[in-house]
Length: 129
Image 1 (tube, rainbow, N blue to C red):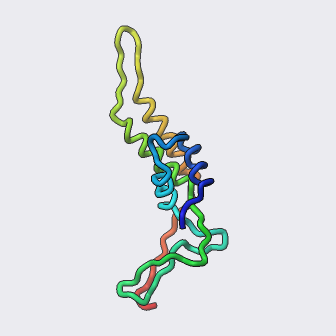
Image 2: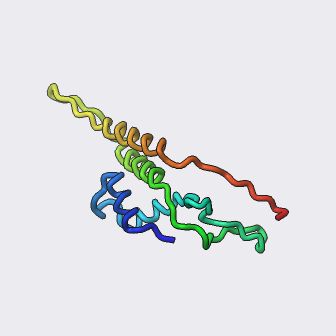
Image 3: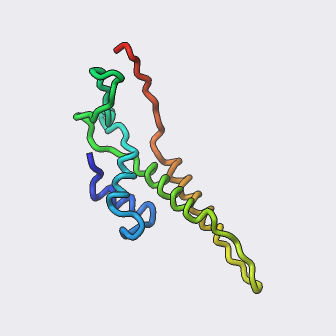
């Protein structure tokens, strides 16, 4: 299921990307959909299909589209930080230009959103089902 226009707009605000100049709506939507989580009723986004060998995962028809926007925002801030990671500090003519502070600030924002994201779980599936 696709992320809604409201979720795309909210994530754009969270990552300070109000236009499609850097991240298209489809790129934002793809990032949101990477972080599908159980809905309010506990339904997971996918369910195992044991009729195949090895088993496969299919969409859960009972799942209501629910995404962890904080995790998506953290991933985008980390990507933005990676883009400026090679920036440097320059001192010339008595003035200091600290471009490396941008990287540090982006990573702090990413850490903030990561700390607010949903805790992850891992379900172990048995072959004998």
